[in-house]
Amino acid sequence: MRNAKSLIITAALLACVGSAVSIAGVEPGPETKQELQRAFPGVRVFEDSGRTRIIYGKPMTTDHAPRAAAERWMTLYGEAFGAGKLELVEEYAVDMRDGEMYVFMYSQTIGGVPVELSPGRVLVRNNDDGTWSVVYAAGLFVAIPEGGFAPMTHTAQDAMNFVKGTEQYGGLPKWSEAELVIYQRQVEEGFEGVRAWKFVGENPDLLEREKYTFFIDASTGALLEARNEVLNIDVFGYARGFATPGTLPDISGNAPVLFPINDLDVRVSGGNSAFTDNDGFFNITHGGNSDVTITANFDTGRWSNINDQSGTAVLSESATATPGQEAALLFNATPSQYKTAQVNAFIHTGLSHNMYSERSGWTGMDFRMTTNVNLNSTCNAFFDGSSINMFRAGGGCVNTAYTTVVAHEYGHYVVARLGLSQGSFGEGYGDTLA
Ligand SMILES: [Zn+2]
Image 1: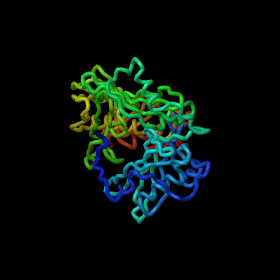
Image 2: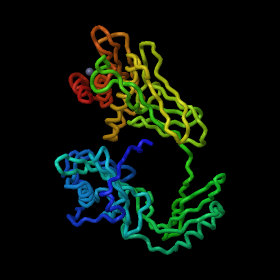
Image 3: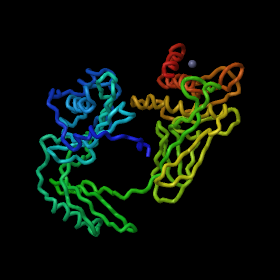
Image 4: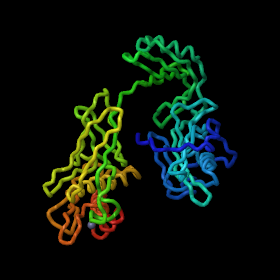
């Protein structure tokens, strides 16, 4: 649901769909990732499970049309994903925000053979001067193994006979044709490509529904994966609350507006739970399709627990959720000073935490931080070595639980966790985070 924004597919952009992307040009060097970081200082690289996944953070290659910019990037820097020279097929292209950006979506092939689950994404931004720049590129690509693929000694028929001969899957009544694909096998140092036969075996009876996609190693005949395609219906949705916008406090000219609530622990009664992401979305693994009750509160947040010194209860909300349909939790629906302070403190402790965790592997703040709001005093806020503390409005001062003050106090906590001394350095550090 969260991705179902109104994306407009532009006819002109679809001209190349399904055709292989190949651009004559500069041959990529052996140290493409380093070249990329030299060419575009400050560019960020996100790695996961031993491979480069996302390259982002700075405008990169520029051209006079969005597709040309995307293809130029892939030609020059595609090797930065560590899968060698990429062979890509454009799946589709969409524009976003009324043509301000384009996303090009690819899949990988090796020698014309499709690589299973190999999405590529390139985001291109309009520079408003007749040029377009790549600002984000992501992929799940795999390389040909060193020394090439192992010889194919098992036919499609061998592969199907093997699975049909197993006790577990042999009874499935319906089978697809087998096709050759490149399967991405996880190995110690990352992933390697394996040529595999792919086919589906299923029981179409909805009361006894079973459906598996099988991958059989075309060289060894071994079962690489029996992927279960019958998925349970998750409970998903989003949490929002009225919080203070911008960098100003909760004053009459800066009334609370709806914001996503991040890092909230959303629980299905008697079931599983999940934290919301920075956009307030959650997805809870769930079986069954009856309505359930979901609850969340500011006491068991992922990165902070709120204590309200005014006597106002720590905010907690619940709602009925139908599996498979978007559910919603709304906090502080009728804003008041103390409740708005809670929402502000909850959101901005989490966002401050994520500012670090999204940019580094530092785990020094990975705990539920004590966050006290609405202390019975005015005109200050402080960090005491183990909690951050914000004051009520009064004495000519605003309630100090808002964006920049919360972040400033959080910054003091970071300084403490890094073992650095506070003093003027701590003040400057807190302000910088704010
Ligand atoms: Zn300070």
